[in-house]
Amino acid sequence: MKTPRVWVLVADGSRARILRDPFRRSGSDGGADELVFRAEQRQLREIMADRPGRSFASEGARRSAMEYRSDPVREDEKAFASLLTEVLDSHRRAGDFDRLAVVASPRMLGDLRHAFTNALRGVTIREVPRDLTRMPSPELRDALAALDVGRVPLGEAAPGPGTRTQAP
Image (tube, rainbow, N blue to C red):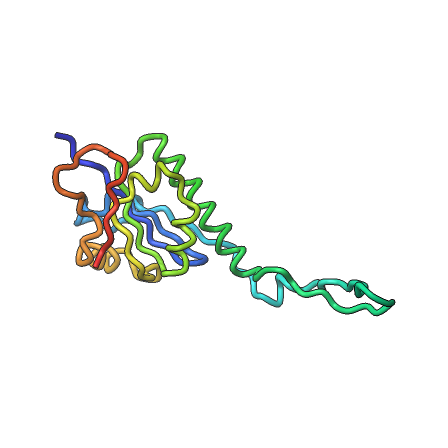
């Protein structure tokens, strides 16, 4: 029976780390087994540097300033979640991992749930709403082991749809 390869995604709104098989090589420092992503961090004042413009009122000749229709920072976070989904899905299609555990800040976890494809949802075994992105690699691996995020549900060795469990 083949042991499944488990990858762990650790993410927040602007940073992400993908740990490839973090529980197999407990003695390594993990630098080579980790993919790191950073979104371009822009301040709100940089995003909204241009004024939104003006519009005529529906009646008369008055004009007033228009407001932004969405939160640009949230849009950047959602785009980052989509980017991570594309990267993970391409690795899944290439057969690089069998199972995925997700440890993310609560807001990012929601964005990832929304962005994940059905295939990624099918291989996700655990979701933990915590932000561990700033931890050094050895401490992060210890924290993940303590959370038991890499545990594959009993009786499963190969990927199967619908095997997601929630962490306590």
